[in-house]
Length: 163
Image (tube, rainbow, N blue to C red; front, side):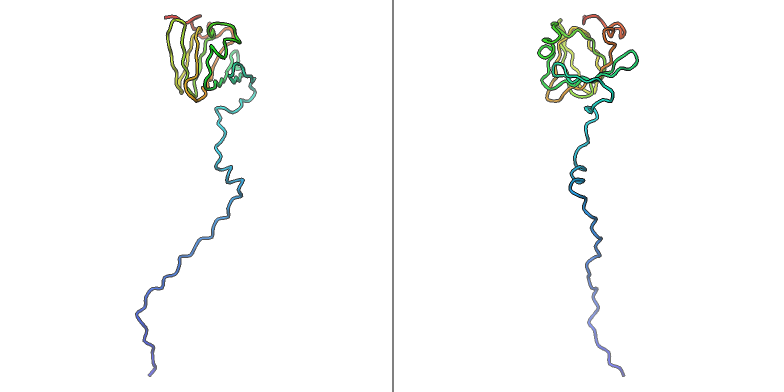
């Protein structure tokens, strides 16, 4: 007769779970680039645009047929009567503005005391004869369409704001 060893009750043996190999780390430059926010396309330079700054406003203009498409970036604190009046030498802005307020908030006042406020995103139609300013700490970004000196007639806007 063979002798057999008595064994204690068998207990499961716990072994650590197999670990997956760690993925190789990206180089530091790629990691920081991945976390960096993408450039804001609303503020990126517009291809083939004529660029200039006037009265603290960044202006980019592109011709499109008989019209112009303009992007204007008005900085916080901008006010037409402070920043533009000394340049254009008129008491109020005599341009009609038609377009889209893509970012920010603007306040308009007409000579008759009428007040109009726009907050992005919003289509804008501003009659000639206004003062205006940026409200708050966000730059106002306006995409505007015009026909140079013929905007009022071609868009059917009044020569001056009236009630």
